[in-house]
Length: 394
Image (tube, rainbow, N blue to C red; front, side):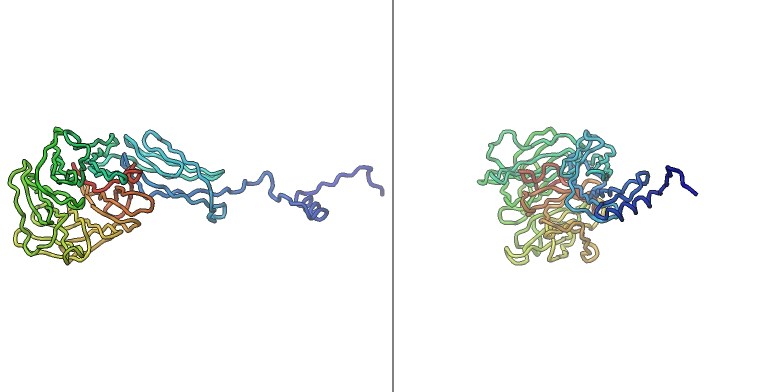
């Protein structure tokens, strides 16, 4: 039997690859069928500490790249973009800054064929935030007010005074109509008051220059409680009259950071356990003079809607404690940096606080929920000029 002069053998794709590999083992053969699925390029996981971003605040996103098998990929460069840059933009360092308006914003990350995204809500917060801004190079300080709706901040306390005057330690009246702060030129420190019409009044009353000793409005808004040059508590009427010492039975050492409870029945303050040695935190009942004392915590701030709850600074931690059940404590925030001057929002849903001693940065202002979630930073805070001592008014 004879074969045809031409015979065609049909070899399958795997057989052809086997023959090629046997004849030429040094070749690298792509064993994927061209018609099969494309290899998985992996993905980017984007994480935000904040779900809600108020206008004027920012948050740092974190991104991790994974290959198709779910293994982390180090050293991946990422490009960032925002679905609504007019509401919230994102830098190429992954910092999202909320601007004006409100709405949902999707922040996307891309690297090669890998993508990832996270959605944030931009929404205004109630009230206004007054902060002390200072220049680390000149030590000049000023008070700025931030509307938490994205409006531009405004500086207060400039009219009719020397450019050498320093303004610090703001404190809102309970109805939010007036702002008191410490002003001076290192020769004399006074209490200044900003009225609703924007006019400034001066009260000639010697006060402590310590920026931690902000004045405190009495619950009825008629007087101010403050620490004098000797660390003793004094009161003065908002028109500058009736300057008098405020006796605190059983406490003779310097006292600072005094704050009335929402019902005006208690006073929280710091005093020295040993003269100019160690701070103690005290809560004094004003009706009978009984007090509670703790060896930890400073810069007390009462919650506006939960009797007996205080936010206090404690080193690198922001702590909630109860003055009703033996000082039970809950850590809201724990470093890095040092926490100072907590201040509650008028609705009790947020706590503003200062942070300092961060590597390479001056002091900055942050917000956090009382449950420890949604940490955000005031935009521009820590950028050349330091910001501290927040006061949250209506």
